[in-house]
Structures are given as structure tokens and as C-alpha cells.
Image: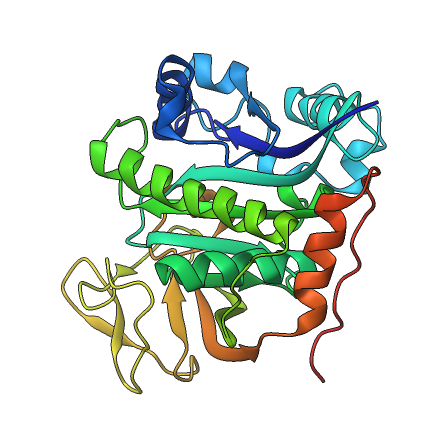
Length: 316
């Protein structure tokens, strides 16, 4: 079984075009993203959806990496593709990879950001190294049983790079540049961790997922209000008590009662409307960098086997 250091995935959603285009240019100009001495495998996550210009064919590929879909006999395209990706590049795959980096774009005003799922030490270490280099915000998604099965969770270490805003199906130089910048920082961080030369920050600042907020709905279950202009394109900014968060067609503002002072992310992401998510709420937390985070990442990158990484328990 051959082992690569890093699997870089683009086109997990078929209508997110910028990362696949970067792949094409990277193949033509290898110096665009120096490998930093790492063995890198690249793959288009959902080529059928990309060809169709759709987010997915049967179901969201980035929710298909969960046991009930991977272990079943479903004939839908995306669960089958998830099984195929794991058979090729998963921990037990023909060309297994230690780390997965999944490149995405968003219609929301997220800027250049990282997403990690849970508190695996190697994930926390990689996110901290990238944040230390670029200062990117980190969305820590955990504790939400309604949203599971994310691609990178099936690898021993992994994170998502999210860049926006950009409309679905649109190529934009700014998005490509920001994706390239974040990916380069990830590769540099991994290379220094493997070499034992990583310069770690003292803390990792995360925005911990609290839950998701649906659109207000009428009796027919249709949205009756939309994210307020005070909220739209203002991801990562704390909601104040009494702030308007939705607006009806006649201009009536709906305030933030019951939301506390959370920090919205993925505000009005186009793809999340079908998931009944107008935005998600987070809380900013500062985590002290733990030596075992870096040790877990170093051990993973130096091992001749690809082993799963345990989650750190949620704080009580």
C-alpha cells in the first residue's frame, strides 16, 4: 500500500469552480503551489456533479462520509463516490493519505477561513499553524447531530478551506488567490511539523458551533423573512441584543430574541437553504495550544502507517 502525505480535494461540490480551476493551473505550473517536500495527491471530489454544473447529483457528497451511508448498499451516486474515495485514498486505501484538505467556496461573506470538525489533536495543531501564519478565523464545528458525515473526518487529520463570497458557478481571481494562499500555508505547516521545526502559537482562537438558525416560516412552511441587511455579509461579527437579524418583504425587522450574543457564520449561504439554515451561530473561544496537538501531527506525518486520531472530549 502506497502512502501519500496529503490528499487535496477540489470540487466536492460540483458548482464550486475555483478550486478545480486552480488544480488545472497547478498541473500546468507546478511552482504555483510548491509541495514543500510533501507527497501530494489531488482529486476532484464529485466529477459527475462538476460536469453537470450542480452541487450534487443525488445527495450532498460532503455529508456522505458516515457509517449508515458508507456501509449500506445505496445506489445513489454520492455515497458510492464516498466509498470510492476511501478505497483509493482513505486510511486503508490503495494510495492512502495521512491528511485531507478539502477546498470549498461559499456565497457567504466568510472571507478566507478554516473549518475543523471536533477536537482531534492533529487537526487543532494544523489549524493553529495556519492561523499563526495567516491569522485566518477557524470555525470549530462540533456537537451537531443534524450535520455529520463530512469528508475530512474520514482521514486521520483534515480541515476545510472556505473562501467567499462568490456566486455558485463563477470563477473569480480573488477566490483562487485566497485558496492558493491558505493551501500553501497548510502545506508549509505540515512540512515544518514533519521536520520538527514548526513554530507554534500560544493559542488557537476558534469560533465554536452553537447551532443553526432557520428562516422564519409561514403556515405553508415557506420562508417569510430573509437575513437583515445588518446581518448579510457580516459573518464573524457578534450579534448585539435586540439587533435586527431578519427582514420581511414589507420591511419589518425581526430582532434577535433568544439568540444571545452569538457570532453568525455562513450567513445566507445559498446551498444551505435546502438544509433549513439561514446562518449558524458560534461563540469565540481561545484554546491554549497543547504540546500533544503538535506531537499527534508530527507522529502522524512520520509514521509508516495511517492510523485514526481520537477526538479530544468536549469541555464539560
